[in-house]
Picture 1: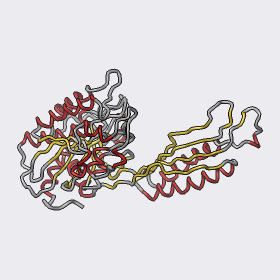
Picture 2: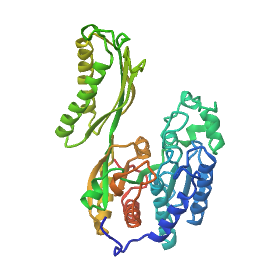
Picture 3: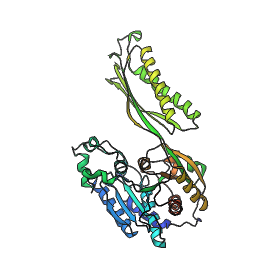
Picture 4: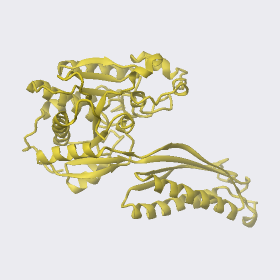
Length: 428
């Protein structure tokens, strides 16, 4: 990445980096960098962040959904709140930057405002959203779901492998599952999130800032083919009902169709077959059952619908061609694309321009807390480059200058929004 140390930024890059690296040290011994939500190490990381929140002059609390929130009070009691943040939990064996950089950058924005004694009309909040990563309860984005009222009784009753219920775990980290309605935010005028790109585009193009336009919708499809198991040595080829054959053909068709749709949508479509199972699984047994799970993502809901329809038709025809039954075609989960607010994108773009930072518009193929916050207020994101696009690995890396540049964009955008947003209005 290009050296950008000559930039004059309104944030303290050294202080930001020091906190980021200190938080990374709170990890499981022998498995860096792991700080799973609801674990003792996660609680230790939260205590570290709470101390930083308080040192930045923020009034600190944990809301009913288990989010750690720090607030810098504004001068106008009628003005809605500008929120910034991300998450501090990690996947197992994750990295030092995914989510964490967004929380620490938001703290640095608050510190920069506090240090300069800049009076804002709007209150500013830093939010560490609880459990953005998938948890042992089978649910992700727990804190941001709570902020928009998307946690129901069924979710609260989910259990982890040890048998603990989610509502009990939520209470254990300071939340209040009986008062989740109080966590829903109706007072926010904007939510801004910094994140490493988790992809190679910015680094490859030597671009410092990605202004995120959208979060891709994600649909997961399960297809099960039912044939008939047989002895691999004695079953004649022309009499076999091999369930693996239509599964294999469908895997190839997923790639072919995804390539075509990606070309049509200028890259805004991807599809992956991440689970392939053949049963009973013996090397000398013709598979009697095969299962695949497809992950399809796009910023265009119409492309996901088109993909689903064509894979439905193809897999059914393929099963018939190989004389097996397509036992099921199931949508396991379905999240619609999130389009970020144009005025917030503009504010981030203007901030990057004024700071002399190169920028581009970019879509996110991964989910983020900002996607749920967008249900209750205008939201937007800033991406910063990361080495080779690696994420969810101990090798995940972003340069100090990149993180500082992203934090500076948040800072400048917050100042813009404070001047531009009418106290009682929400940006549309």
